[in-house]
Length: 221
Ligand code: DC
Image (cartoon, rainbow, N blue to C red):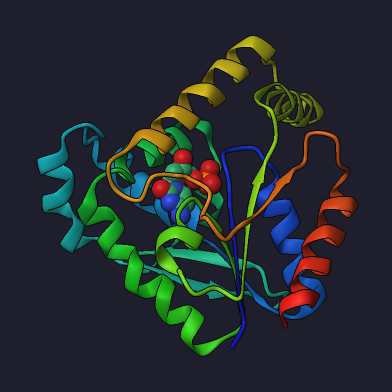
């Protein structure tokens, strides 16, 4: 089995790149952020304060997240039997996921599921702690980043394209706050694994990043 781990901060383009590569090389794409988002959605729906760590930990045994794939191979996230894929992309869910993913019981609830997927299939998994924690023996580890300016600009363009009203400075502040939260938490913080290949996509196009990752994979397979 081969596994590719792609980690990096919010907005670095991980999922766009990961989806395209997985499709090209026939691997299953596992978006672990979506799993943390599903759990965050559970807490938001229940009106639970993301900072109430005791309450969050106590609820974990009631939360079951699993993944399924539709006919086109797109990942679907199932939360306690409900397909919540359409509800997890909102900004508030991402922010809540960044807070609640710092609770050890939340991470434990997902760890085995993530590792098991890599035991049975060739996977390309993206997230924050894949190379450092989930798959320390991954065939290839990539740390994909870009400057906060570039990440904010990309997000701004994406929202504008959808006709949404937004403010570049606010988006940049949110990105910096999320980086800080994900990098400074005690358990499995976002950081580059020592043996990960660093790719800064600030001045690279999507096809250039894809080609770089595939070239790295060809070296190890
Ligand atoms: O990649 P994303 O925006 O969908 O992730 C949402 C949050 O989930 C992110 O801010 C931190 C958390 N996360 C994590 O802690 N570990 C992962 N492997 C993936 C995501």
